[in-house]
Image (cartoon, rainbow, N blue to C red; front, side, top):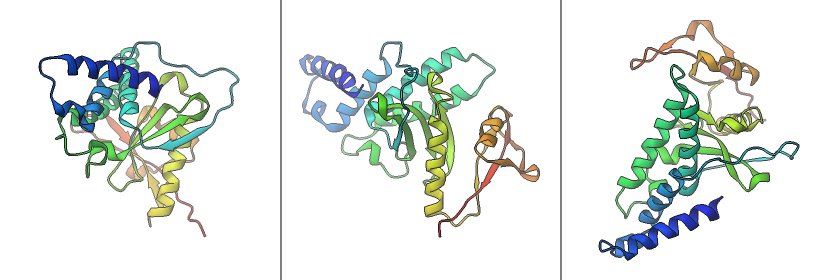
Amino acid sequence: MSSHLERVSNDLLRQWQDSDDADDELLDAQKLRAVALHAASVLPSPLPSPVPGSPITFTHRKPTSLELGYLYKWLHLDELSHPPPNPAPYYSRAVLTGALQHVHETPCSVPCLRSPFHLCTRLLCSYRSDMGDFPVSFVVLKEDGYSIDAIGTYSSFRGTGAAKSLVEYCINLAVERSDEEYYEIDSLISSILFWRKLGFEVVPAREIVKSKLKELEYHRPMRKIIKKK
């Protein structure tokens, strides 16, 4: 996957270098990332699908710039396949759209994926290791570095355990870094069943959170954190 993106990115870079506007800044790492993200965002369809009967293994880490663009691509495809009134794909894509914009607008001297307090530093992905580290699920973490602010899974890989493994990974981060007794999630009603399958409970007294923008109804599932001895 990455080799294909790198090839497309290099082709775009050569086109820029051959143009009248080319200058030394094009060789800057930030510009290379911007080219790679653009290449990823226009990748042709279809994207990979799970292989029936293949062993499933997951790894978790921050995405590279190339992979960030790839996430943008599959979120865009999911958006097209989920017309209104389902708001989740739109919200998820908006999260990464902001990250992509940041990559293009960040000064060349500032590495975007290490820029303090920025969204890019709070992205974690779940990868299908048996498919060459293809990113199949992601979470956007809150500033504490372990609480989930948004979550998404590529439609073809839902039900494979990708999101579950990523949630468990984040809970383990909370076990190591937090003194809180419960791990809390703000969730749309449509996602409550997913969280309950992972051992979360909806606390009635803290059930509803209203969005000021769209008047969406949120619930707050909670799961007790088991501290390591």
